[in-house]
Each structure stands twice: as structure tokens, then as C-alpha cells.
Image (tube, rainbow, N blue to C red; front, side):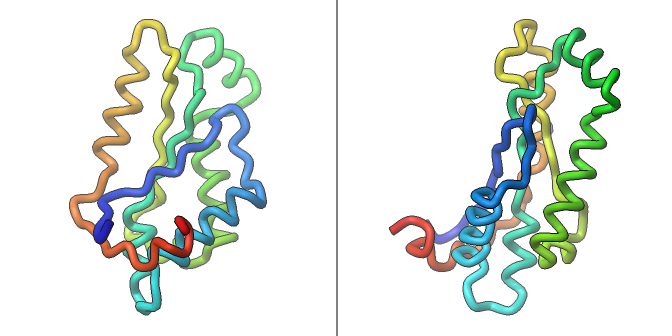
Length: 138
């Protein structure tokens, strides 16, 4: 694998914790995909998309989140802030870290497809070299 268009970081949307294991995985990706090139970190982060799965789209779940003042925007803002604190190279992105919300169990499918379409639209047109994949996949 020489080139990558996008790396999708899939998280549990019901508990979007920035755990130590998640930090370790991102650090490994950074190490592998940034290589030793000075500006390669920008390429890696420009091709990263965060997908919050299990984000229930039904009216009851939306009302529950609204009652707790939890919105897609607030979850994205909190995650982006924590991400940039832990991985300062990400601040060099030309746009905010793209985040999408997906409910794979949405019965009527309208919001489910909306999230997947946003994910597809978030895929950058440019590719980047993968660097040393052996660092994360022995």
C-alpha cells in the first residue's frame, strides 16, 4: 500500500472518550504515515476523518441528547479540542477535522445515509504516501 486517500477513525458516538489506547493508535498512525518528512504530518491530518458511530438518529434519542445539551456540534468541538491538545500537528490543517455521525441501526435510513454521504464527501481528492506501514502492521 503506497498511497492513501483517507483514514477514517471510527469511534463509539455514545462514549466518544479520548482514551489512552485511542491516543496510542493515533500516535502509531502518525508515526507510520508521517514518516521522516518534515511536512508529511500535514498530509496525514488533511486525510483524517472522524466517524462517530452508534449515534442514534431517532426522535427519542435526539430529544434525550437535547435535554442533556448534547449536539453533534458540541461533541465535534469537544473532540477536536482534545485531539488538538494531544496532537498539536493537527492544528496545521487547512480546515477543521471533519467529523460525521452514523447510525447503522436507523430503521428508516434517511439520517443513516446522510451520515454516510457526509463521510464520502469528506474524502480528500489528494493522496499521500503511507510511509512505514510496518510500524503499525508487523
